[in-house]
Length: 359
Image 1 (cartoon, rainbow, N blue to C red):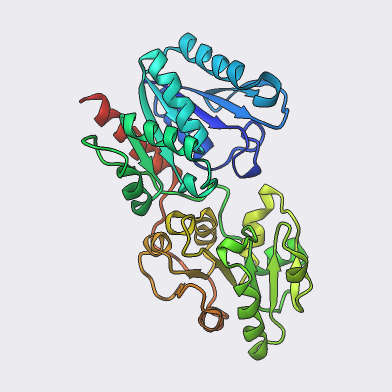
Image 2: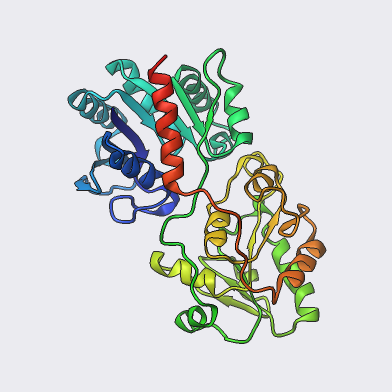
């Protein structure tokens, strides 16, 4: 089949032209490896230069919204599709690309698939016109895929008699493999003997991230040598907390090493319109590195961890988080049940397209 993916160029702040990442890269490239003819149309909105390249059997092309304007950008994406003559248009990455993919599919006669990994409506709850066009794309799509069952059920509310949304789970990128703990600590210049608890996600109020500081204080009452390792750009009050070690932004190739240096990795989500449908990639990455996890027990996280109570804590309970961290410290590496890979997810996606094509 001829597949045209439509996606933002910089999901999670990673430029897909130069930094292959996640379902946005591995679904197209693995489907190409299965024999499909695959192209990816990328769109940016930060004055990035137009780019074209071929990599891993996929042709990638990109243009910028600010450079072209909305009409010319949509016209460029449509002209690419007309030249390519795809069997399927696949919208990836967020609400805008569901809308754009629907627009292209209607004008080319191609079938439409829309993939979602988050509840995109939680990003801009005030943008009702955009939500309307997102719902229209979901309703019109021949195939809808979602990162997990809770999100699939949410999307199915906008569909009538079509096939229910197929589940295409999140996975860790193949670079996430475990490193020996002390080797990882030396490479990251972290203390060899201290208990290291880490959080490598975004620091955002809607994820109740500050509760980790409260939990860490409780841990330090029993383990004064413990250190809390943070990446990215946490707020000043987190960086000033005694015992915090800040790594800043970590290069892609160092992320598996940084994770492997930890004794416990924390994954925090909240009971919000975002958190109730969030399937954290960081959870997949920590499991791939065999790092013990403490995670807040939203329904998606429970599903990802197969309801394993060793790693789950109630939302908003700092003391329970601390208790679970203390219980896991010193346990060593965890060999989790076999994890989903992007190759598994690509096969599921291929099956969904083939089943719909046969109808």
